[in-house]
Image 1 (tube, one colour):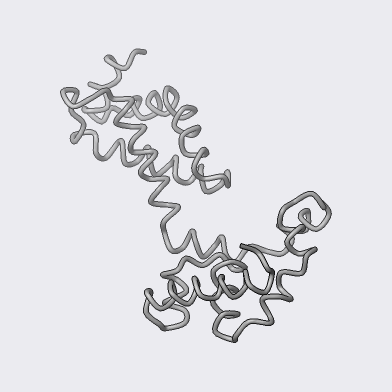
Image 2: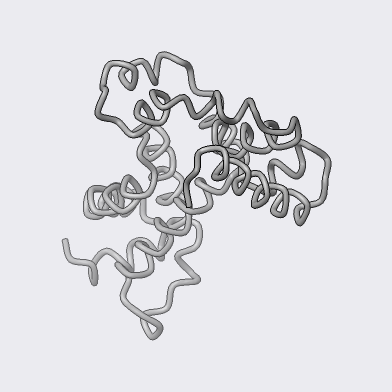
Length: 177
């Protein structure tokens, strides 16, 4: 079936159309999604959401504005970005089990191990307590500056300034320019 034959069926909400739509586009849309979202289960969830959005919002598609494929790829891309930016997804990434990182300890060529092997955390411990908190949140726990601001209950601008000052102090301790 061609796209030109499929679109009228989708507009009519024909039951066969959803299956045909999925069969025709699921692989390519999954490729777009998994390019942004690396975890397979999460990417599959987004793919399902994308097909529901396509089905429910087909009336907003206009052939005059662009190709159908471009429209559905944009839905997939935007849905993936929305998922990445969602608080629940970000929190799930921060709370990963230590088991997910065991392989890093075995691989001495990884940058993280090189940083650990020079004892960067020992240098961080020599900083002021406020610097230790900020660097821990931003670099070791992966918080955004806004999330660190919320966590520490201080203004975002203060987090940015303290981060910059703390990194400069750390550079001085490490004698790195």
